[in-house]
Length: 485
Image 1: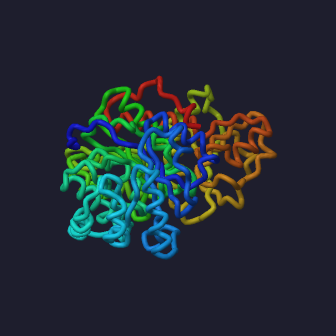
Image 2: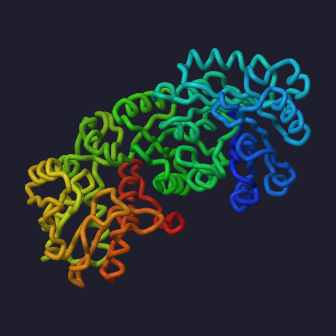
Image 3: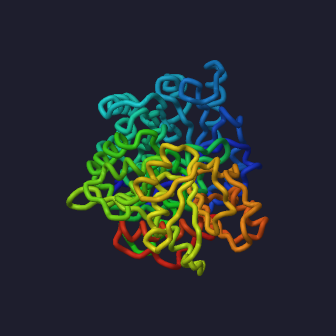
């Protein structure tokens, strides 16, 4: 089957825990028709019959060696024996190119049982193609190439390889900080498998549950344009789930990706150019801290709110170039309005003078509220105050009891930056930080029975606005954050 006619991909779990410990996750995978790559180098040899009751897809035996990033450090005799034993029970045996493609091993494992893999350092497209040519000289049912990318260009090379070879038995993606987006995008470029993780540490590698909840897998709906969220740590963001659900509901040929990077401008320039070269241009993105100021400088066109805040959290492609927006103002003001809060007469403080705090201040100013800015670092606090024409108070001298509305706009989750014990009973706390559990500030405020607007409410409003800015469509109201919490 050519990749042009294939409308689904196999969701594969890299199984890194005992099946008995992760049975619920395996059942979820099974309902999606997925398969599993059993990492025997991590969890030992598993009887595949335990898995076949729950997983209808292929079972792959993987004895990843230390030179390929795994844990197996035994000798070749032991390795050969375990591979041959697994070949009698598993659908596919992962053979490492070079190490396992010896005449003896190939004689014992027929081509239809072989998945030949390569794991190594990132390469250019030319280097990756040379490696691919050597790998595919050995007949196999499937080939897997996983370089560790150190640059955005290296992260793009597996995707360019998929486009170039145009085969339906090759899966290629990179690991590394920008690897998650390529892992997800690969099936639309021909990869028949997408790998998630069950068990182990899933910081960079998405879990199978996240793959199935945040993206349209195992189906592959038409994708003609890309959107994404860019930041240092975005692989756990809820934005992909919300945007991709909305694309499916509206029938939009789009895909929303996480793009994690520690160097925004080079990554943005390389990836946007690379995606365009693949025929799926990046049309817009949400940009999160600490890159909101860089996003503003990147833009050819700046909207008024972004200019006033000195930061942007949305970039949208236009004929004139990237257009910078900020939804931080409408997020805070909109959440307060939806909660029925009257802003008139409220003495307000904003704790945190980064892009989110400045955006919140700009939004409140438009509604006649003049907030005081509070920040731990004086340089950023003074600069924000000058930019917005507001007063600044160092965090060490901040007296929360003087204010009836406090907006917390720092990324701090687990520490209380200021006490809430002396706040008046009618005080309102807005915390822009969200997560699966309440922040220290939200917990402390709720214990005092104060009125709290948490980051989920702000996120709901901001994502809907970002969706409209990027796509020109309203996000369906039926989509909810409740299942994402």
